[in-house]
Image 1 (cartoon, rainbow, N blue to C red):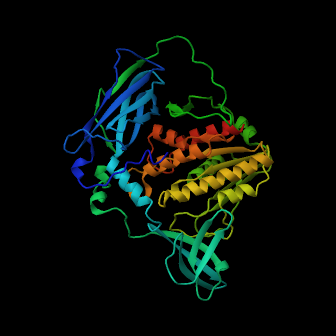
Image 2 (tube, one colour; image 1 turned 120 degrees about the vertical axis):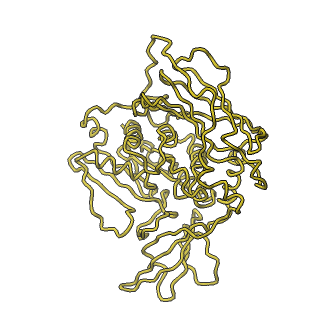
Image 3 (spheres, helix red, strand yellow; image 1 turned 45 degrees about the horizontal axis):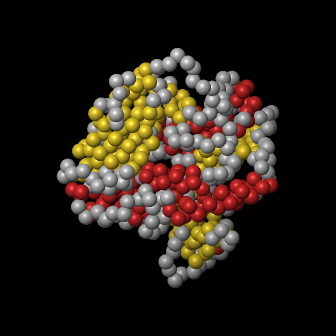
Length: 471
């Protein structure tokens, strides 16, 4: 699947790369009248820096439509014909003047360079472990690969071939590793010519459009068909919804309104919710704690970066826990590894049942490493979920995929192209399991956010969908 998306290219001439400003986007079979519910097809023709039409595909784009006056927006579906031409399919969900946005994030040559660089090595980041014995502390390098004849500590899950290493301090045991932190290595796997493509001025450039908008009317007086409430097991299409008045509206199911605080409390009452993953799902935990005043957090007295958070509402018997996923965590602040566990290990430790909810989010911290690491990890999670459903089929499981993030922030390490690929992998790996997917990628593209931790109104939209699934 992935190999069909990645262009097999080697950059030798910048003049041959895709140029957003020379490219064009136009409506296929334009109409005099557009109605709510119509499909708008936009054709994109990509030209290179010399003004010549490209003859191959693989460009990475983000596409959306919006009506700022209505605080409305939606993403679109891109079809690559692998000849320099693309079709984008937009559904016109609302009436009004709808503006079209086609952004070329990376030309196909940059995509090919990123993919080769990403899968070359683990060396973009190095980890420093702190080994502790009473008052004695010794720091040592750690990572997924260590090339040395020195003594090495091996932290291995033998069954699932997950291995992490540290150089062993001379005077301390391997079991005395307490803290980790990470740092960017002054290293690039991109050559000087490729690096030019990732200068800020060459990333996320709008493609000219003719026309730039369409006017959409409500052409029928009939009410739209009532949607069933969102339930676990429903297949989520793409795009999965749209924004209207800054509220996310799925197109395949309806979100519960939760108009009163009591309705929201009833949803969480008598539930144990385990958030597993990165800081983007920790945002959900934090949002719930801030929104539900009955939830009280504990000071767990953990040094450095938070890796475990717990909140309880004794009156309503609600238990919330967030715990980071295990290696890799990319953070310059120290964090403890003494109670560290991979997500699939955490799943295996839970009995499950109708009062259990598990939320899983993996991706952002894996962007800096070869994709095989991410694929292996999510397959292990899938296997653990199969075991969970065998013993407790009524456990509710929600998969949150990745948010978008800053456009120009160190593309070799953090490009959203990696997140796009991760989301395709997640959908493929968890297909046919009785889980629900909160398509955070689709939501953050529609809201046009550029922060890995998006604003509260975006988090609220994600959490309201999550609450609907578990209630």
